[in-house]
Amino acid sequence: MNIDKIRKDFPTIDGKRVYLDSACQSLRPVQVINAINSYYKEFPGCGGRSIHKFGNKVSEEVDRARESVRKFINAKERKEIIFNRNTTEGINLIANSFNFQKGDKVVISDKEHNSNLLPWLFLKRRKGINLEIVKTHNGVLDMNEFSSKVKNAKFVSILHSSNIDGVTNDMKEITKISHENNALILVDGAQSVPHKEIDVKKLDVDFFAFSGHKMLGPSGIGALYGKKELLEKLDSFLIGGDTVKDTTYDSYILEEIPERFEAGLQDYAGIIGFGEAARYLMDIRKDIERHEINLNKILTEKLKGKVKILGPEDASLRGGIFSFNLPNMEPNHVAMILDEQNVMIRSGYHCVHSWFNARNIKGSARVSFYLYNNEEEIDKFVNALKPLLK
Ligand SMILES: Cc1ncc(COP(=O)(O)O)c(C=O)c1O
Image (tube, rainbow, N blue to C red; front, side, top):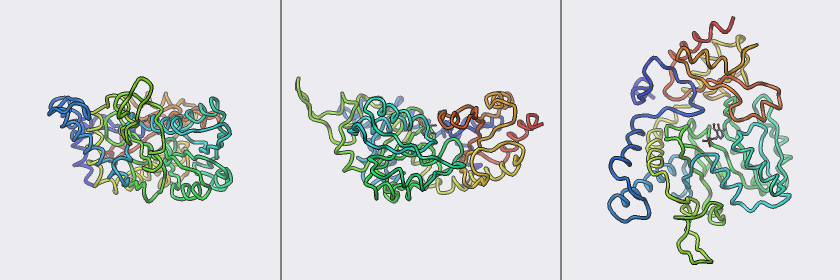
């Protein structure tokens, strides 16, 4: 991976501003920006509806994007990829389309993003599902507790990599145990897909939700993978235009998958940009994680003993995430001071309020790396932080 060459693809990388907030949202290369613009500039029609030149071109490009995203996660078939707005929508789609009943057991972990906590809390309140929450210790899921709580569970919904501390769960093992207990499994892949090679067939997960904006794609576009045989049994909870083959005043025949789950006019520019992002990353992503861990090790070495790091001490277990706290300083204050020096990091509860509240921690400051970051940027960050370390 040639980082200097990659950096040139990103218009906002200018040597002055240091962007260390890719776990929230990544920067976009010019290839993705051009792909988004191509829709508005060249063929701004309705895909799958109008049969003129613009419409046909949109349908072709959406198909191409779906194929690129399929290949990116190695799904078996293109129809197993549902386009939606983001990870949050994918999880909500499953939580609400699946026929959960009172007493059904759903297992999650104690480190889920609100996107993978609230849809289940909502079902607990509305339908009376039995929500079981498995603990993590120093970032790592308690597999004994998981094995015990998954017994008689109907469903497991667990994050792959954490946005708080970067720790990645052993999804193959979690999936194996879930299936041995006849539970289906949904994975929140928001923080893993951008950084690792994901093979949903090898992992054998049933559903996998992720977002385009963390993997160089546009904001507001994401995908939900589902095994064909499972998706075909689901009714979508969002229906309307494009989700049906035919209607009368008192009946309708649902479309096949994936269209059945893609209600209303789609974000064509977003889908096309998402496909381009998957193609951009396809050949280089095998090196991304190694690069990020390398940066994380360098940063950890520089700041060891000077800040309180969240999660395991060993940087290789934290991927591209370095979450930390300084004594007597609010994380937001740290981020604001750094921003004055053109160093952008994230601060706060990272949408995992439940985890922080349970530990009485008032959030954290978070550095997150991606393929375009380099060592020089670490130095700029450390220099900007230095006055606060005294
Ligand atoms: C682990 C994790 N899950 C889910 C989400 C939600 O993603 P989105 O806002 O794109 O739906 C995020 C976003 O930061 C995340 O980090």
